[in-house]
Image 1 (cartoon, rainbow, N blue to C red):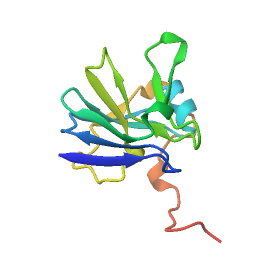
Image 2: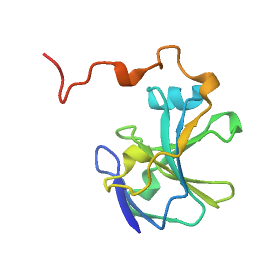
Image 3: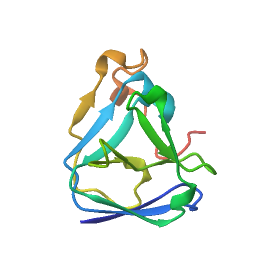
Image 4: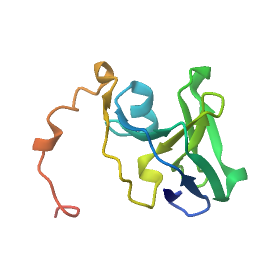
Length: 133
């Protein structure tokens, strides 16, 4: 499989060659902080290859207090980008950074003990196709 991705401004582009083994929604405080959302949504693969097509030298990587919570991002638009972890043996891809559809469904939610107090029954919140008037 080949997946294409990019940042919001288009300065950085990449491909993932291979398959994903898991897809987790992480509710830990660090993922909530670095996404500004209820959870991070990341794909994981120990077999895939990350290939930068454009802007590799621009990619910034932040390892929070050397804790292993690692985020790569575009310094221009701030979009989350893939990175290599566990001594380059694990490709971690923010699902929203992909321009291609993925064939894996989410594996599960993790770190639920840290989820936000407002992250409850979100499927019951009214839904709109566009910004409501």
